[in-house]
Image: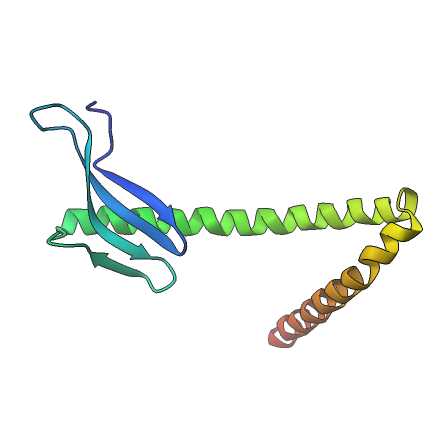
Length: 132
C-alpha cells in the first residue's frame, strides 16, 4: 500500500473534492478524509471541516489543478477536432444515405447551428486579423 498517493481527487463539476489518503492506521485499511473542495473556474481551494492545509498540501493541490486544467483544455480541442469529423461524416451521410424524411427532420436544426457557428467563426477571425 506504500504506492498509494497522499491525496485522492474526486472530480466533480468545475473542480474536485480532495481527500487525504491514510494507510498508516492500526487496521492497515485505506482511509480517506476529505480535506478540501476545489473550484477550477474560480481558482478556489476551500478547506473542509477542521482540516488545516499545509504549504505542501496546497502545493500538491495547485499542481493537480494545473494538470487538470491542461487535461480539460486538451479534451476541449479534441472535441472540436471530432466535431469537424462529425460534420464531414454528416455531409457524406446527407449526400449518400439520408432519406427525404431524415433530412426533413434535421435540416433546419443543422442549418441554424451551422449559421450560428459560421457567424462566430467569421467574427473571431476578423478580430484576429484586425489585431495583426
